[in-house]
Length: 125
Length: 307
Image (tube, rainbow over all chains, first blue to last red; front, top):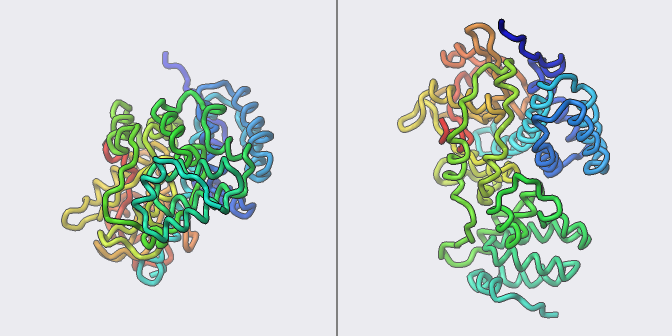
């Protein structure tokens, strides 16, 4: 008999997790002047989170928010909010992946905006 | 006041232009502490460009010695997955350590070119495999991920930061407006932007002579997205006519249909398009219908090698 596969909880199963949701979060972080290096730092600190239990992952995220990113309330708040949404073991790697993408998309969007100046009509053609 | 310079740093400084050497003297004078001066010298000895050293000096000038030590050393906080090569290189090169820990610098490449010394090739100390080899090596044994973004298997596989992290960051390159003479539009900007994340990129024209076919480009992009790496690309009315940059954010598969989510950072349009429409080159769901097809794609280099 086939065993039922664990399903991600609703926020992590959303099709827009790494689309609309990610871009909204990115907008909030930019408005709060969170710099790229803080996002990179966040990614580095999330290494090793995959494979840990939900409760431990949530605790580590909150710890990261209150210690390392205490000076970046918008980022800290994001981590705490996501920590509270972790319900199942499969959510953890999905969250790590989401936050990695967040850092990458932030860097790439900045580069694409700069690069647009090299295109005809400043990339608005 | 004349600050002493180590032999190793002096050896590099001798290759700098007179103006760059004067600038470095001023940077030493402006430095807030002896520790800052020591790290600037080590950055020079590690063969960073004048522009990089200048940007590094600007970044660290406001830091206390405690903050600076924390920002440029790995010992106290080194997680197990830093490689020995990274630890060794970080010890010799504080700028490398600074970036490895998430710090970013924005060297002014106009300044770098202006201050550039002789055309003699610069040799950086190498402690790692070359980026391409290391990336390919790190990923060569990995299972190819599935394409279904909604499946737990595909999405749960986060980007392989461990493998990518074993490679040295891509070298600093220009972030100024004029496109490089090679016709590359984004490689240098992307390398600069993602240096702290240790990702390298390679541009490919789509459907031009010597370029990738659209089908190959899409297959490679799907692989990158499945590993959690968004894919920058250019769109336009015809092959070779790049009009806008967009970012492929993710794919979503339903039955036999795969949809692609694209984001235009300038107009902030976020759209889904079917793969069939993408391959048909007839229309993209952005407001501007003139740009109907992919004209260039920029793939993460490691994944290109792996695929």
